[in-house]
Image 1 (cartoon, one colour):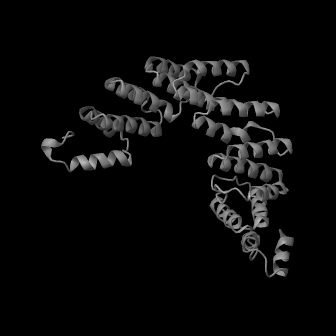
Image 2 (cartoon, one colour; image 1 turned 120 degrees about the horizontal axis):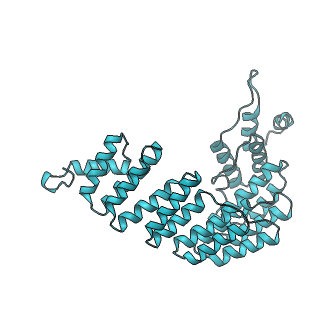
Image 3 (tube, helix red, strand yellow; image 1 turned 60 degrees about the horizontal axis):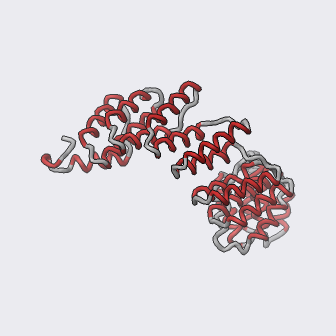
Length: 333
């Protein structure tokens, strides 16, 4: 970094982005070099990218990697629906010296292109990562799979899996969880069962998201009993469920009219985790409000008060609105 500092002092027309990088890196009065924050790096990289200063983009990405900071969803925000700069950007990040920074930059670009739904380009970048030896793991392909499945395009998602296998990249548990969640969300439990079989065959095991998908599928099919069995199995295996897993069950119970049972379900898990209590009771109260089950809401609010559980903003807004209503029209008084 010292040579870069000298270079900047010799070159009066040096990029302002490189000047910012050098200033942040230099020592003053014996103090250690300043490490830029993640958001500051994002700002500088995007400013450099929008101005076409790809040398600055490269140096910023390299220093970011040396600082051990990961890229974010905002790192390549300068890449928009107009991807005319893609070739130049690819050439730039291919020249990054540090392996971690180079792989991270490519993965970040794949995620950005996927979000913009430039799927062929995203897949091409992912293939470049593997073919050029920058890295060989399923993580690079996750954003592509996630976007295809989110749009319900399972055929294209499976085609991506085939590309991965052709490149000797083994789909991991997260990749299959995307498929499992997608099919369960669509109510296609037969296909979901097939994915579970594949997980067993490939000995990939399961995690909280695997079970979350199964609970979601059961709830979408109106089988709360099956969802509860899955939760019981998680308890037996010592696997804490995601907050969303409980939310699936609560929502399904309220939707099916099992209001008292929903409250009992929430109370069974109460006291284990303060954040879980906040999520569960808050979710139950809001679901009941949407169903105009105001008497049941009173019971939930009373339970929350007794347990010292704070209300979320939306629930507070409802209570404030309700407190201002006239007594004869006020369901909570």
